[in-house]
Amino acid sequence: MNALIPTLLALALAGTSTSGWAQEAKPYKDGPVTEVSYIKVKPGRFDDYMQFLATTYRANMEAQKKAGLILGYNIYAAQAKTPHEPDLILTITYANMAALDRTDEAEAVMAKLLGNQAAQNKATIERGPMREVLGSELIRELVLK
Image 1 (cartoon, rainbow, N blue to C red):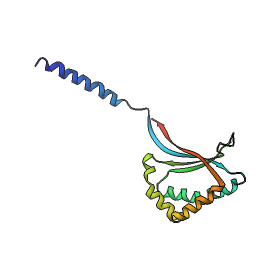
Image 2 (cartoon, rainbow, N blue to C red):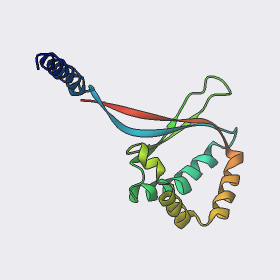
Image 3 (cartoon, one colour):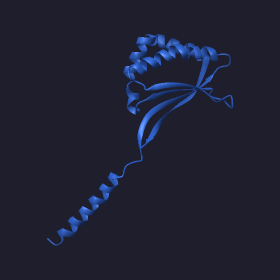
Image 4 (cartoon, helix red, strand yellow):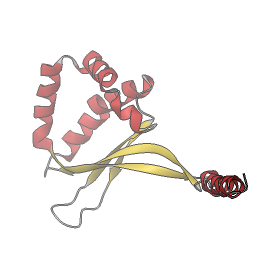
């Protein structure tokens, strides 16, 4: 019985110390996720590409927003310092990482707006001569508490 008391005391103290760690809160919470795409517009095609963004791209983004698939989107002009840097940056903001898995819903919105997969592929091919996609990344906002 006397040997049991130190063991129980040790277990109680161990539980107290780990629950202290569990109670420590991060000073931030995970926020929205933004997909950032870096675009280099081909020489002489800036107005053509901006026309595409103002029509087809905007209609798609607005439909995705209305369907609750995205929170928003933006287009930024960038000052390319070398020929291999972007001159436009496109962003699409999602509520969280899980929103990126709603591909079936996003494809349904695009099909309703742009047509079947063949029509979407044709539009992608037509956009090709206007720009080069240099890359993209996902970034997550960290919201301070």
